[in-house]
Image (cartoon, rainbow, N blue to C red; front, side):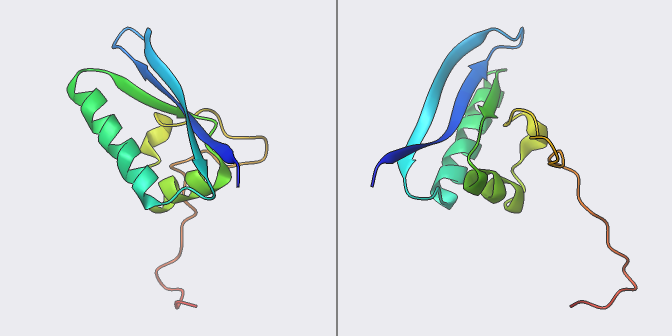
Length: 100
């Protein structure tokens, strides 16, 4: 099985200048270990006054980031694709509706 691009990671300083940028590659589907690594990178970058951006995430990684609550207000991602909702937007439910 070949390696696929899961996402592009860019670290910027407070002024927006790129400090580092690389592709995250892997075989198969990304898992929670990838999400954990990205969260740790973001925490480390934030501690240094930097911003971690994840661009062009594959669908599986994007879904994991959203499900884990780490969509990070799109600081981790580029722009939504046409017809796709922006991350951080959740459909509301009526508390009176019974669970399915």
